[in-house]
Amino acid sequence: MTVDDVLKIADEGYPDGAVGQHYRALRKGHLHGSNKVGDTLALAVAVELKETQDDLAGEAEGGEVSSGERLLDAISRMETFRDEIEGVIETLRGKLKETPDDESDDVAGGAAR
Image 1 (cartoon, rainbow, N blue to C red):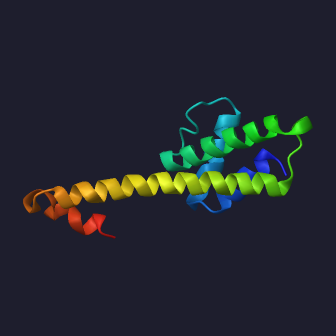
Image 2 (cartoon, rainbow, N blue to C red):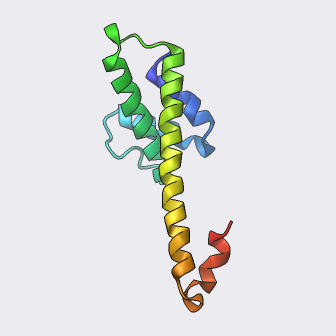
């Protein structure tokens, strides 16, 4: 399994193929991903997986990495990514609770999903 394979699998789990579009742009040297896709979360996923998978191959003896190792590493990275995003969400929710009612009435319904 290659880095490309891992990114293809990740792209299957993301709406609209945005991870794959950004990854292809990154491979062509476009440091900010695809300008055709405005989804910066998909760009962050593509960058994170590409960099960590490249690092994993560099650390392996002879550059050979098993499919299981690649998938486990990708899962671990995405779980860390999820945890970090959840931390941001919880901090934002905490600040919303501290906001006086007259300032948060318009946003409370959308943030409480």
